[in-house]
Length: 169
Image (tube, rainbow, N blue to C red; front, side):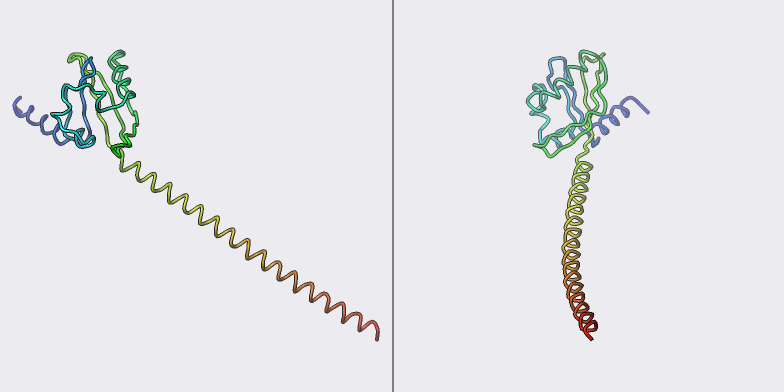
């Protein structure tokens, strides 16, 4: 494969990668983003390139980028929620020393988080229903016990009257 074809292939991968990719320099200015990043954060590439990353991401993200910049160590598996974008991601932040940049890949996990929340909601609703059923059964059992107690008492009174009548004879 020629170098030109490889470059074209890398451009296609960059363009179609479903993961958000962002690259910042030492001054924490955005140098590169892919279309997935722009889609996830409702931005245009032209609005973000060469701008401070603080305009688009929060202080926690910036601190992570700085930490990677200073230590040259990769941060893996950093989960982060951007509630204003209804977005939940798993991040990998890594340095590219020879280019003097820090890159971040954000894997969109929003669907999985939504599923977990829906499952939690269903579990809570199920627990609530089970508690209601048990409470209703306890009420019915108490009513039945009360009725049995009443009929047992009435039976005892009747039997005592019969015994008293038989004893008189």
